[in-house]
Image 1 (spheres, helix red, strand yellow):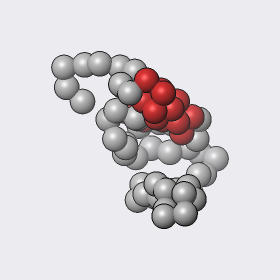
Image 2 (cartoon, helix red, strand yellow; image 1 turned 135 degrees about the vertical axis):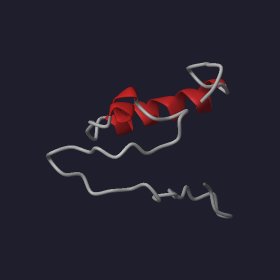
Image 3 (cartoon, rainbow, N blue to C red; image 1 turned 60 degrees about the vertical axis):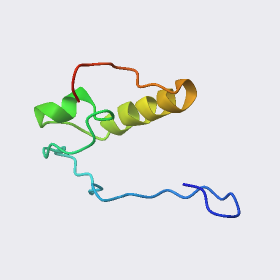
Image 4 (cartoon, one colour; image 1 turned 90 degrees about the horizontal axis):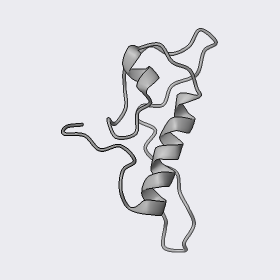
Length: 71
């Protein structure tokens, strides 16, 4: 998001959680951006990079990197 002075603002930490060394297990996220490991219920902070890559691809190309018949 960008405010009126064109300062970039980061928002929507509704699913944010503190990372613990044991990993994360709750399946959360938006289907278009979630890493496959999240769907198995055993993942780590590296899944954030997957989501970042999907968002970057979407911003640069205007389409999602993976197409399917449903989310």
